[in-house]
Image (cartoon, one colour):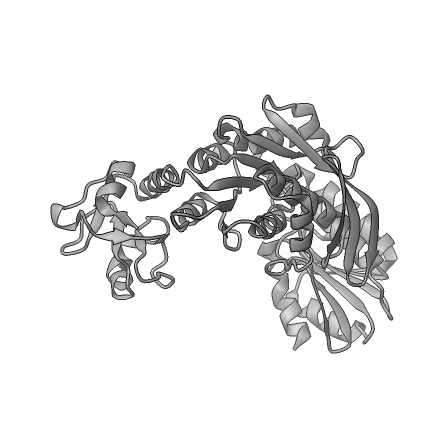
Length: 442
């Protein structure tokens, strides 16, 4: 538990004397989600969080953090609520001296790799992980503040849209191990080049604890060219990685491979498909190895791995095989999903329902055309949805139809699909393709 006196010292805030000994554990910035005993962070964005302090207190909040004192409320007052929350999280992190911290980022695969890394660490340690994809300034702060004293390992996912963001997150977290899954074109509209994205991702190393280790994708040419000046271990499918995969075999249940490196050969079975998940598993096993988890224990832990949300969730519904992978999409993850569709056993046809890949800036047209060309080779039918996906349809040729209207897409899918077909749903989160999947599955 944290006293308001301690917390105020960490974030440079003020607390009234009568509230100095009030304690809390964890923090939340949404009064609807507050748990008893947590700190409510009154952030100011589209709405003023101070308006929700009374509701949070009624729901069991122990105290609040904000920019102005409310009468009778145990509070820490600070000049800026978000900065105060981040400083508070960094202060609590400094108390967790015995916890092994793994920080993780990447343009593609970071949430899946985070889940796999947490599963591997949990084979040996009491482990806490980022919930869902709470990987921005608020989410990382909430994750850190939610780690109980005595936790043995913590896996913290960090995301970014602009340069400088990861620098702040990693300096809060101070990981002993920093993982980068891959450099891709996600958010390229905010950068001058893929090299610019790589530089921004490498900011995660700025908060690395002295003597810490970078665990990097050795198949990524941008990361290889960067040659970071710290202890580095490489993972990937290529032969020049410290941990690599051999004998990769895919079947209806997932994928099998042999993890080779560190003087060992360890058989691994994943209940999820795709070579991209082999790479995610290698990242997880190598990161867990860095904090003392033997490769064999990581491999056993991954036997029961389950991904989160709509990330390549495969299930049967009404005679169809559904590949739900519509949490997000980009020029790297969409081809990976198409290859899973291509390799998936199907009694009928393979249908790719593909929506726009967002935040690609000047790369958008080229990226969508490349996806369309691949989709034509991987699927029997391509249904492209959204204004940017005109280029998918154009490149896919006679196999493709294009839709701007959600209802028209849904109607065409219902009319076209037949039991026995395997259907992939893949698009950026902003396209809300999951709603089409939900209505189609009813």
